[in-house]
Image (tube, rainbow, N blue to C red; front, side, top):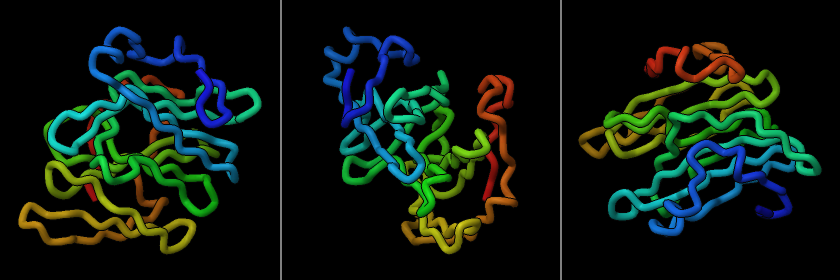
Length: 181
């Protein structure tokens, strides 16, 4: 399939089922970062509750010949219909994804370092709200979480403080433990 100039081979994507997609009216959204020559595809997006969406994640590099660099089996993007589930840092090197391992807990924020092929997970806040991301410096970010009381709680996150995992290692071997901010 062709999305915004990216040739995506849907047969290589985990859980890409055309019959299921047609039944549930699933759609796809591509988030491109020209500076990093990367794209994040959130696919098979469906509404799971009023204005709450979920979808699968695939990350590509190289628009002229897209290479699939990350497409975990057990990963859900979870977000409101009015927000983007994916943001890039100013340099395009770090990808922020609202979602992670499916759970009933808070929606985690997953950081993907495209240069070093690694990821880290930050989980905090109210059960159905993913944090807002504000870049302070290239290595420091402020995350705003909604608490159970509806107030905003902020956390400064330094990239060097996170527990990073290699993207090339199987997702199931990571223990699926979510880090806390």
